[in-house]
Structure formats: C-alpha cells, structure tokens
Image (cartoon, rainbow, N blue to C red):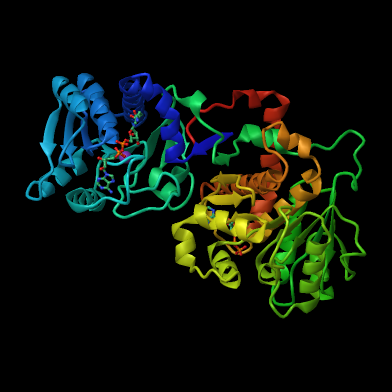
Length: 527
Ligand SMILES: NC(=O)C1=CN([C@@H]2O[C@H](COP(=O)(O)OP(=O)(O)OC[C@H]3O[C@@H](n4cnc5c(N)ncnc54)[C@H](O)[C@@H]3O)[C@@H](O)[C@H]2O)[C@@H](O)CC1
Ligand SMILES: Nc1ncnc2c1ncn2[C@@H]1O[C@H](COP(=O)(O)OP(=O)(O)O)[C@@H](O)[C@H]1O
Ligand SMILES: [K+]
C-alpha cells in the first residue's frame, strides 16, 4: 500500500531528527536521492551523463537547498550545471557546495529572465526546487514569470520536481498557476497527498519516494493507494464448497426506457467481477435487453423487499421521472444492505446515509449534490480541490464517496481516503461509469461482510467500504488500461472494459498465490 501524508505530517516527522542536529543529514539524503533519480532518468533515456546540461531553479528555502546540493552532486559527475536563484536569498551551504563542484550560479532578474528561460528550455534536465512543503500559495513575481516562460518554451529535456512541483499544495493537491509540469517528482520521506490527488497529480508526473530516515516518525498516513499486492489480498476467492448464493448476489436497479444500455453495462461489470449471481429489477423492456445481452442475469419486475441479495447497485441510467426505479433505489438504501448509488440515484438520496452506502459521482454530479446539501459549489470548484470535495461530501452525507476522474478518490466518512490512478483517459467514454458501478456492486456483495480480510491490511470497520470501492476503481482502471493496450493503446468502449476485467483479476490474484504481496515497498515508483 502506498501511503501519503500532508506536508505538516512530514515536517512533524522531521522534528525529532532536526532536534538531534541531523537537518544537514536529511538534506544530503534528499539531495542524493534527487541526483540519483536524475542520473537514472538520463540513463533510461539513453542520454550521456558527462556534459549533460542541468538547470536548477532554486528558491530561498530548504527546497532550494535540496536542489542546490543535488546540483552539486550532478556537477561533480561532469554535468554542466547552472543554478538559477529565484529569491532574494539562497541556502548558503547548498550554494557553496554547488560552486565548489563547478556549478554556475545566476540570480534571476527581470532583465536576465528571457535568457535564463531559454537556457532552461535548452537544458537536458530542469530541476524545479523553488517551493516545497513550506510554500504559502503559488509562485509570485519574477519566479512565476520564469516558470511561465519555461513552461511555454519548447523544451528539449525533462523536468524533475524536488519534493513536489512548485505551486502544488502538498496537503490538498490544489494547484496555483503557473506550475512547471514535471515528468518525475522525487519526494522525500513519504509521498505528499497533493501528488496523489487532482489537479496536483496532473503536474507531478511519475512519483518516486526517497526514504530519508524520518519514516519511523511518520504518523498514520492521511491517504492510501492500493497496489497490486494489496488488491491480491483483498480480492475474494470462492471456497471449495462455494455455491452461487454463498459467493454473493447483487441486486441491480438500473436502466430506464431512455437509458436501457446502462443496465446492461452495469450487469456486465458485475458479472465480470466475480459475483455469484445478478438479479435485475426494472422495466420489462429493459429486462428484455438485459436478458438478451447477459443471459446469466435473473430479471424480475418485483420489489426490493421481495429479492434476497447481499448488496444493491442503484441509479445507473435512471432519470428523475423513473418513479418506480427511484422507489426501488430508496428501498435498497433503507434495507441496511451495502449499496452502490450511482448517477440517477444521487439526487434521490436521503440526507443522512451510512458508510456502507457508496456514492459514485463524477465532479459535475458531486457539485449538484453539494447544491442540494445547501453548500453550493460548481464543477470547477470540485475539480480544483478534489480531495477536499470528496472528504467534505463524505462528512456531510455520512456515506462513502467515490469521486470519479483521472485520479479516483474514495473518502470514508470517518476520514480515511484512498486514491487510485490505474486507468487511461480512454476510460472517459459513455457507459464506463456504469461498468464501474457494477464492479463495485459485485465486490460489495462478495466482500462486504468480510471485515477480517481488511483489518489484516490495517483497514478497520467503516473504512472497509472505501477500500472496497477503491479496489473496484483499481480493477476497472487496470481493465481499461489493458483493454486499450490490447488495441495498441487505441480507444475502447465500456463493454471492452468489462471483458478485460477477469484477466486483470486473475493476474492480480496470482500475486497472492505466490506470496508476492510481501514485496510491497515504500520506495517503488508510484503509478
Ligand atoms: N526540514 C528539513 O530539514 C528538510 C527539508 N527538506 C526540504 O525542505 C522543504 C521545505 O523547506 P522550507 O520549510 O524551507 O520551505 P520551502 O523551501 O518550501 O519554501 C519556504 C521559503 O519560501 C518562501 N515562500 C513561501 N511561499 C512562497 C511563495 N508563494 N512565493 C515565494 N516564496 C515563498 C518562504 O518565505 C521561505 O523562505 C521540503 O519541501 C523539502 O524539499 C528536505 O531537505 C528534507 C529535510
Ligand atoms: N481522464 C481520465 N483518465 C482515467 N480515467 C478516467 C478519465 N476520465 C474518466 N475516467 C474514468 O472513467 C469513468 C467514467 O465514468 P462516468 O463519468 O460516470 O461516465 P459515464 O456516465 O459515461 O458512464 C470513471 O471510472 C472515471 O474515473
Ligand atoms: K519544488
């Protein structure tokens, strides 16, 4: 499991070492990790190290210090290194080290800005070490103008962010323009939340965590990301004596005359995700289509109370006028069973919900939900602060909230947050959310009452609903990626995502069979 922390949590973990006079040691470790990452990146791109051109944009705080020491390491390895000091001061020891190693130092002035931007654009590597966890707001003044100019320039090299891209909020992932998008972020001691939530993740590129010796002082993480090894441990496996009812039955209340396909796709998602049986409830015309497309599904026009299931999926493809379906959706929520509530069910929810109800809005639907809760926010505001929005929605409703997007966040009402980014932009296709709802519904039906499986991973009680939803998002994302890969990275339809899912499930489960989950590590590159 990948863990992430707020900037404050990481800084607090540094405190005991700083009190022991180890601040310089921490900075050396950080700088060394950063320099090594630059070397590895150059090598992986087949570039020569000797003579490679490096520009370090260095702010006046410790983030700049990390960048200057890393620049010194790189200069000592024969790279042509220039530090551009963006503030009125610089980390003195870092500056001295860089100069000793043969690096050049340039102070940023308005007059010199175009030439420095040009030099950065021509460099093989730009290191963004302007602001780190001590940032208050975004870049300002000439530092902002320089970063904007480098962002706009046609760059030939790659960008490595030191700890986090300057302008990204470490705690929230909010992004204050201008920000230089990084190809790689090398982050110290532990991943920062802002790197694993949009829009911050848009600027982070790949994320590499470099341990610096503070790890044992870190508190409980404030954000988690499931890795394959965790998925392997959480995925249900049928026992030898399993029968379809013991494996879990999912009831599906989805689809309408206007959107019958949503019911089919939700059922296909559920069937692909290991459920013992799917019972479909809805209008006869939709049921006919479901029968034709998925003969495995048992269809009826009955009531929620009249159908025995372990979990419900409600809402995909429902409109405000689908009164019978919306009544079933409300009954499912009142049943006390786990429910995934998607799309058309979201406007019809009671004000207070339990954690075993998982809401699956995209940003627009979440904005509408906030309107109804009397806390108006528009879609842009949700997208600008996805972490805060998901957390606030879970707190306000009491439900588990999964906010869909390039990064999918799942917030449990008691505070746990998961972030998954396993997908491909090709997943932004009609019906893909219906498949996701089916997958999560299937997992709720199978794993909802198996709290022990989650506590083994340190996920307790009500947070397990969020973990199940995150597991669903990870499977769905990986299935989308695999489906696209099978057509050489080309486009996919929602149906193909469901088709690709069982093989992903099988591959991930093998990790568990061979004990590979033990390889979970803090220092792997994050996806
Ligand atoms: N505490 C430590 O010993 C360690 C810190 N490390 C590095 O230090 C960073 C944190 O260092 P700092 O606390 O010095 O903070 P930063 O280097 O992030 O920035 C703080 C400095 O920038 C100024 N500043 C803040 N917001 C600004 C803005 N919007 N525009 C312009 N200037 C602004 C502040 O006045 C201050 O001088 C981490 O991100 C990490 O890179 C690492 O070296 C590991 C060890
Ligand atoms: N840019 C993206 N990158 C990766 N995944 C995405 C992206 N955009 C959307 N997705 C995923 O695709 C799915 C889209 O769901 P949704 O918006 O409900 O679509 P629909 O209503 O058409 O079914 C979600 O799982 C979401 O996380
Ligand atoms: K930075």
